[in-house]
Image (cartoon, rainbow, N blue to C red):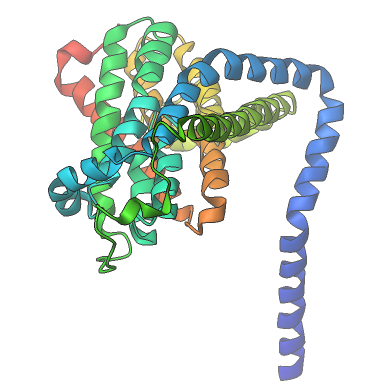
Length: 358
């Protein structure tokens, strides 16, 4: 009897390992088949993804990537870290140099913050634990996207854009404070700010051309990678819509949203689309005609905070060679979305100026 139980357990373990080993190849095969079956819709989705990347991502992110790369070859980052260390250490339990990742992450948007954090880790300016803490709150939606694209273009109201930007930054800071306890206190000793940048060459007039070229090539590589993710997730969303998977998932999500007073299936399907790819979901939510537009705004706040799996995989690809865990980023962004939605709800409820319900 005991031998039978042992053999059964071994069999279950073998089946589990077999499924785990073959699940990714199965998904990739299914994806390839769906590319052929829904080729007409996929072609249109891929074109839309390319246009979105060329018209929005490249102009907004490429200059910031080049600027951050160039700044990393100067002593500006070290000086900023030394200046703000008395603020960043007690509040976020990260070195002052983390302020550079936080500020640039807020100004330029996804995934600039993550790229800077990885650079700081590779240069020895922070420990692994500190880098994981920073990943949780330094990678954010940019003000140009929130104010311009979401506030003005999608909702047609700049006040909504400012509301979403305020709650987004407030939630970001809240996540940073909560994540100061991530993996306990960090007692690792780091180099002094005056010498910690020794791993990277410092820019001067003699090597300016070489460093400028390297910065541009590195930035273009990152932007092209982001473009690949934008196109990929545009096609994935097209496949899920064509196969009615989004509708099925929306029906499963609706009972949970109903507990929050959101019973319209359109919100469920749009939220799922946004969880997969941010811009697509925000566009769908903004187009839902509803007298209680606060629902649209609160769900948009959640999506802006979370960022979607498209951004998550972009960050995953950026940190892949740095031995950093994606877990802190995922938990931090999920918490960011929840807090941003909660803060937005509070402001809409208690401040009439932010209540746009008809």
